[in-house]
Structure formats: structure tokens, C-alpha cells
Length: 230
Image (cartoon, rainbow, N blue to C red; front, top):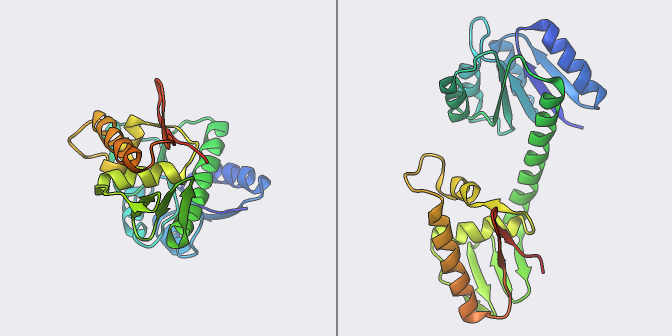
């Protein structure tokens, strides 16, 4: 299964999580303070569970110091419940945040969800290095960041191409306008999700100009958009 690093000074909690995760087949590394956590992070775990309030170096500093070298998901687990603490944790590079006390089933589900997301991300990154995606008359050159329909290159803006790539790499999956906006423009952008509607309209128009018979992007009413599989 996966190598998971727990960095938390609550020994009873760590032992509980270690037992549960090992019962699921995971390899669990344990650190009870930030310095030991930094050392174990060099073993490149697939996921890190990180407490904030620890003696000496807190979880914020641990995350800041390892994030440039460790790419795996970091799941903060903390008694701090203020919105500002959650925002700081995610801004420093955290991928998820669960407040103590928590339900064990929810935590285990979040861990598995983050591991699946990371596995998909690694697969997608590998595909992007070597793949041209083909959908009927349309092809997407991922390394070249270009799209052709019926052999003709489409003149897409960077945002338009990024939307096409996001949807095509997850063909069949429905994305809300808000999710697309956050993924393409980022959380800190000044616009809103209705920008996505206009970009989708332009993408459809450009594709239809050379490939009018196939609908590549479908609207899922009340939810968002999806890329249609061939």
C-alpha cells in the first residue's frame, strides 16, 4: 500500500492511527516532534499527517520547510479551529485540514481520498509527458500544449487550452464552474466562475468551426461541464 508519515506529539492518538492504518496495509512512519518529522520526511512518504501544536517546531514551520522537497499530500490534523489557521495551513502547502476532535472513519476516508487523488495526479503527469490524447476528430498534444481538430490547429488562449486539458484528462468527470475556476485561475484571483462560462462558449465555437458534428464538452445542468468520451 502506501507509506504514511504521522507527525504529532499526542502518543495515544498516534498509536491509534498507526494501528488502524497498518491494519489497512499501509507502512506507517511516526514522529512525535517537528525535527524528527523533518528527518523522516526525507524518506519520501506518499502522505503526511501533520499536527500544528507541537513543542519546539510547530506544524506550520514543518510544512514550510518540507514543502519544496516533499510533493505528497499533507493533511493537517489540529485542535486549532479558527478559519485563519486553516487558511494558513493550506496556503503553506497543506492539502487538507481536519479539526480535532474528529471521527476516525472520516479521517481514514480523507486519507484514502488524498492517496487516490495523488495516484491520479502522478498518472496524469506521466501521461502529459508522453501522450497525445485522441477524441474522434480531435487531438490534444499535452507536451506541446496544442489542440487540433480534423488536422487543423485551433487558436486557443492559454486559459482556453488549460480548460480543455483539465476536462480531457478527466474525461467523463463532471466539474463545477467553481472548481474549474479555482483550478485554472487560482484561489486568489479577482474574477468569478462566470468567466468559465464565457471561455467554454469560445472553446465550443472554435472546435465547431472545424469539427461541427461532435460535442466534446457537455453541460451538466445545475452542476457544470464534462468532456465526453469517444
